Length: 90
Image: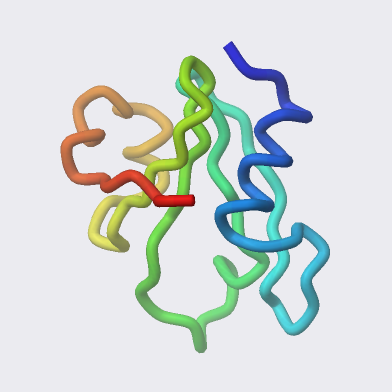
């Protein structure tokens, strides 16, 4: 099991700094299986598509989900949608 602080470091290594400018920053949103890397761009209607990353609580692995899998499904049905994700390589 990893901690929130470890998840932050792992996410920064995978997607870049949390405080990145130009709408490229992010924060972590905790759910049962881990943390969604919630990008600052999620609420911007001009941004379409894109992957959603999750830092898994049990393993620290970063999984990337296609935009076709809703964040709400990732957070509520992780075990059912994990087969749609790919690991993010370091």
